[in-house]
Length: 511
Image (tube, rainbow, N blue to C red; front, side, top):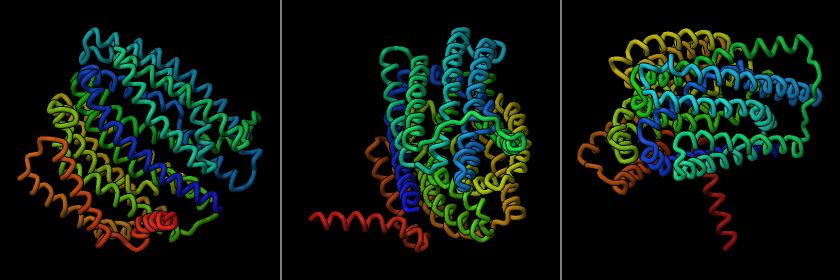
């Protein structure tokens, strides 16, 4: 139990260390990459990645199923059944990997009829090559995901986060090497495939030698397979929804507006990815714990307490990121990516604020999945996502990337904000009014700081990185002070204060 708590605590810390790395490295790497690739080539790379990401739906939603059932059998101390489930998914995912590669080949050779309105002849030739390489990369990721799921289900967060950190550092290094050698976007795609080759043996060896877990290839009971398929079916719908929300926007822009629009939209979405990582770094390490709580019949009050406690912590972090970006994002993008990417600010703003709702409530997703009650969520999101795709297709010719972002933002407010909050309250039994009462009280301070920041920002013409860094530091320091003094409860204050006190004590002891 003590080891599990240490893994959870250290894993959460390493998640944020990796988050810092994944934020700092792109800060230096992305401008170099953009200037070496050019807007059109970067848009082409982003478009290819978006198209191939559709192949991830061929997992049929089994990703979350692996963690759920391994965790369930671990809680029951049934190692044999656990290894049989692992063997089943390893065979299944190997077959899916072959299917992914076949579909990738088919899609790449049909690029011209799909993108002939938005891409030139030379761009169509290159996008075929990129999609072939990325399809092979995607195929490799399937067997890897089985072993990484084993690591997560066994709550070995330290190893998982260290591997993530290794990947975070190596990927941009290999990409820059490829760019300097003149291989452009094709070289970047190849470097990503090299990383996948490294990840498979690393995860396999850890599972075999450290966890003493080996796939057991036995025929599972038909009842269990039906249960897993039933669980995965609605997770599969959820995966399709994610594709429709994020990848489809770029595909539609590539079809109707060209690679330049895709490049600008992708930069705007980069900030969504960063803020999402801030939130999910904490909730992802809690999924096995939540599954265990549900298996052991946790009460609605206990689940509500966890939902609010984690949501408040996530909000403190997410609100800092979003309020800071609202005040300084426009100047940051001008200095970082260039004035040609100015619209990326509005694309980010239109999606970041609505995205805040699911980011501070993703503990709820873990709860409904653990309870196998995610069917309603999947179906309602699918309907909203289809409406989003249709509206995006209609609005892009007139409003481009900003129109696509607006449609996605409205869809998130309706789906994640209205529909799911009613579901959490009425069906799952989580006290949603109490949750939002907590959040609204905490929102006063970020709201005031946004208004003050935007007002004061009018009197400062930010023309260099030094001035921007100073202003962001002042804003961040003020936010931390105000939230600590007026917004945080004792539990949240201790999360910050206790580790600092321990470090100070260790320093004093060494002296």
